[in-house]
Amino acid sequence: MDRSSALTEQFLSSLPQADHALPNFIQAIREVATDVMTVEKNNADWTAARVLNRLAEPDRVISFRVTWEDDDGAVQINRGWRVQGSNVIGPYKGGLRFHPGVTLDDLRFLAFEQCFKNALTGLPLGGAKGGADFDPRGRSRSEIMRFCQAFMRALAPFIGPDKDVPAGDINVGTEEIGNLFGAWAQQAGLYQGALTGKGLSYGGSAVRTEATGYGLIYFLQAMLERMGEALEDKRIAISGKGNVARHAAAKAMALGAKVIALSDTAGTIHAADGLSRDALDWVAERKSAGESLGPLPNRIDAEFAEGATPWEYPADIALPCATQNEIDADQAQALVDNGVTLLAEGANMPTTADGLRVLRKHSVTYAPGKAANAGGVAVSGLEMSQMSQRRFMSADEVDTALKGIMADIHARVSEDGQRSGGVNYARGANVAAYRRLASAITAQGVL
Ligand code: GLU
Image (cartoon, rainbow, N blue to C red; front, side, top):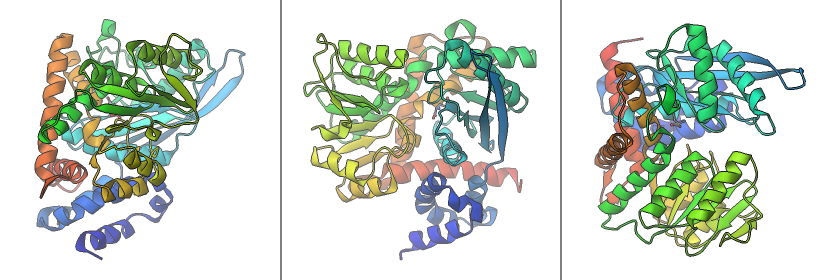
């Protein structure tokens, strides 16, 4: 066993027993530990401060009942959570996810990853994540509104503009943020930026909706540039049909790439020469109607393959933008067999540990979500400053700032991930974020 594996195992065995029952959390923390434990051990202050152990234990986990009435007047009960990871470099910050499959394991790993992602943005943002096991599918708009109001009744005491600032994530978009913000403002009796992802008419930022997808493409451009390549004519396979997937696709198309696939749980929409704008609009329509992508109408020049994933087609680049653990070893092998040489994560931890091993074995250049998808939370950071200043930026200004932030993240990550013949982006992201967090933790004392 090499030094880093030995230190990683030693570190993992120091975690509370109960945490070993959280597979996603352990997967996320193992990846980070492998890269940073040697860095921690080489710095006496960081070793003494037990930095990674402190980041592994969230500041607090809030769990609450959400009670609401459906359209038939029946009482419904859900479970909500907020995991406040660390506020050592800024107020807690991270999205809310509504999905029947959400577990505390997911939110623990997501809050942990968010601390690292937010550190990479260079902005004063701590890390958190939250959500509920609520399934919005099949629910009316007024049911969703009542759910959001009930959720906020329970969460409001724990958040605020300098305390914890939630935003959207899976199934929490502009409409839900509108309901959540309205409920918070009414309860708090304040008009402040306690949430981001707000609509433009009440304190939102231009380009926030597009930011994660656009930022992913700006990060990809920086990677390609470093390798002496360009985005133009590259064939890109994208999974997902949500906010991140669609805006990444739109930006990639606008910059001359061919987006050959988008997907949902029912299957994949594919066009070998690249999907058209019409196809992308169709995907957006189906998403907002809560319908699956297929079957396609005749006017859309593409095929819908039921049950297929985007990784089953020839491509140069893969951008998983759906959810965690969507690429296992088989999917990773399929990507490699289809010619993919670069993968950048739009979702949080979409690649499993086995999937990663396959990518590494075949020298696929890999950019982790905490670097590649940080554009969303970065623009959330800009939304917070705009709201505090009561002075808003134009879409062009935000887009330029986003490009600058993604280029800075790429530079930071490349520096710490330098290795002979290229960059190890995963290591670079983990180490760069860790350094910032570690220096803030040690500066503030034993807390
Ligand atoms: N949910 C997004 C993420 O995973 C955005 C979080 C935010 O804007 O606070 O980074």
